Image 1 (tube, rainbow, N blue to C red):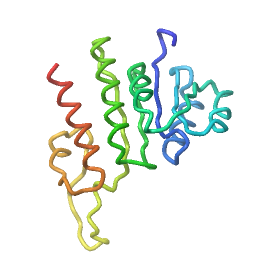
Image 2: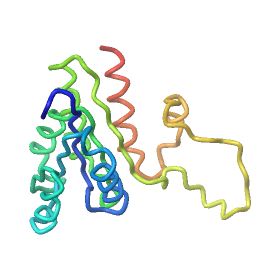
Image 3: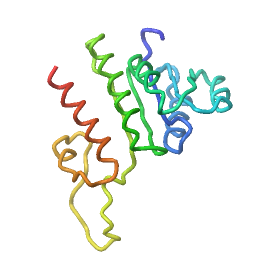
Image 4: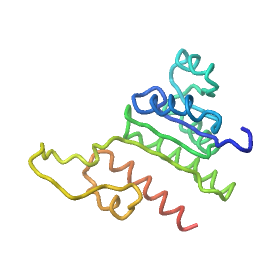
Length: 167
């Protein structure tokens, strides 16, 4: 990685959202980033190499590999639609980011999507609300009920953020 480029690690690069994010990065921002993606499929990995994307073969169960890759990244983008509740890979990403922070003193960036299912209420258009969710409002996010989908992952991310603020 050159010193003037940020390193990006992307999980979920061939999914619907992750694929769109990767395409935008490659087309519009490639000069700014060195991009690494974790893929299960060697054929898909080969298709990305001509675009200057570094590919690493593995799965969400390859937690040591994920932790290592996350520890090398300035920015980690996690698009987990395929398995938004994969606890061990989440812990690996967070451990890698913590390691990077401890080694560099520079807070890394985590962009984590698990779908908006956490905000589902089955209102079916029968009820309106003035509530607007904001990812920067940690207090609001902490108040989302624990029975909501993907909540265990969200709580891990919130706890890691809180731990980082204490350092």
